[in-house]
Image (cartoon, rainbow, N blue to C red; front, side, top):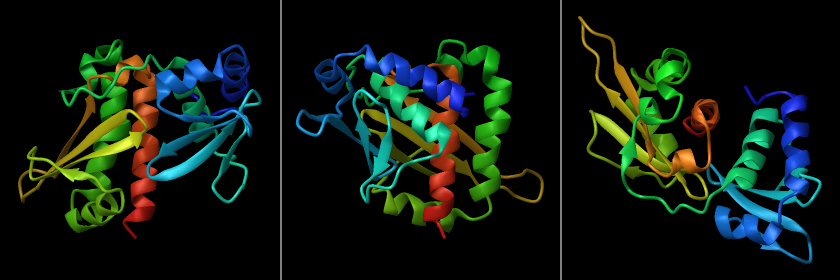
Length: 201
């Protein structure tokens, strides 16, 4: 899981070997040649990534210290292949390695989504509205939202009843595997759920 200083330092080292103009073209992140920094939008929040140092600050200039966020942003920039969103959704099982890691993803992300919002649909609606998410027709309540630049994710909920608990699912735009591996997909959901928890308050 890319949540440690070691993972962050590893991807920072890879960033230095990449051409910033090429990164900008493939990731959709604006690159300011004078300031030597990328502008990345993650969950509606703007981050500035210094090149080649890989240090990341928010719009107020405060240095980001959350390692999952730091590492995932850099992995997005380094691994981007320039694939535009397809408007076609895939499940986690369709991601390379997703079939093997699905039990972990199910407990870590899908069940967490169900626990957080399964009994409080209005909370998810509040959070998604602040993200300018688009309501979809999946399940009893679902939204497609922009996670980072070219990456879109859909969160789906089903109402529970006396016999069955609330259900959930998570879909990704089919371009997502061109930016993130199976483990990254889980981190994407971890981060998104944490942001939505705060936005829903």
